[in-house]
Image 1 (cartoon, rainbow, N blue to C red):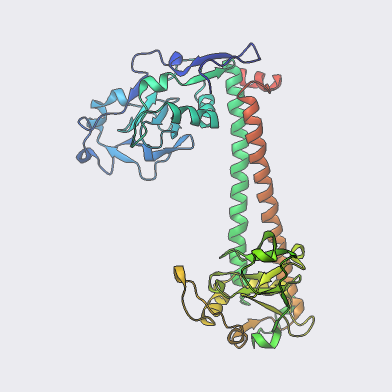
Image 2 (image 1 turned 135 degrees about the vertical axis):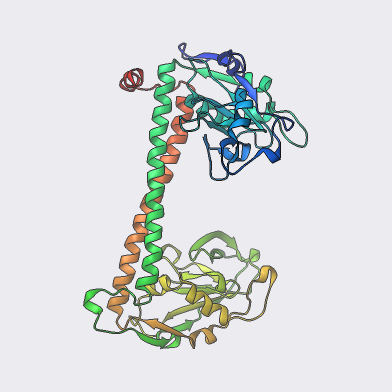
Length: 424
């Protein structure tokens, strides 16, 4: 962010933050240790905003310190007002917060710096500039200090600004606020769906909750070997062949592609060919959830011989999607732990014994129809979670791209929004 930034659009002006902090004490560091001692803090009283209390443009009061009213009155020149911008002036200098109406009257604490803005600069628009990549880079480059970065009022006053009219500043800030609100709502929905899934995994996979048409058929305890078997599809690796390798991430209960490698890059002598709906268990990380069914896109890929492949004992005897959801519960991970022995680095269990695992017992629905209905229900919920997650990621990408355009004047706010901002 250059200090003198000449924009293509003539209605934008290049200036600095100090231009809008002309009033006496507008740029003010928090009290020094000699003015505010550790012994002054109490459990009740006026909140004091410290660097650890600010971030992402707002003040977090969960662990905020407080001082008695008498001390706050003595330090009234450090009192905050709505619209002030509070900076962390040492350490994580890119932290800042915009003071809301609720926080008016609180104190700017030691380690912080307050900017009180004149009219003409919208604090929320300033927040967008501070939170941008260019703003972060400028602060890091201009901070002082060797062991710990520091800001002071002189540095903050020089922070470069490229500004449209106050009305357009407000319109841009309002537009971004709408994006943030939509993003937070999507995150809320994602968390709610994940919580629902955790509950359903407990209820549907233990028989605690049943579908009406299956309630007269009790669940049965069966050994794993009655429904699943170990399948081997080992092939010798070839120096000249290009393999598409798959693996299971520790604790993720899902597959990911490690890309394509030549045989000479592979450190194992044997490889398994895997098929859709095979159930894989890692010999090294089974106890930590490194197990799961193979999705369609990995059909025909290879895995090392440090995996066991489990398939139905007889075709159609069990729904492998149901098995996959069982593997997402701690009970199956504990079964895998008990079927392992030996330790390795980071206390990973080694030497998973698939035959010991096959002799352990599972509580299962008596019919494949019930297994499938449970799997269908959970798959539908997973689909909703993935859709909401994709929407959230798309919204983040859209905001990131358009923010760059809005904050440089390359994209202008529609006239209708400018009218709304002017009359708000």
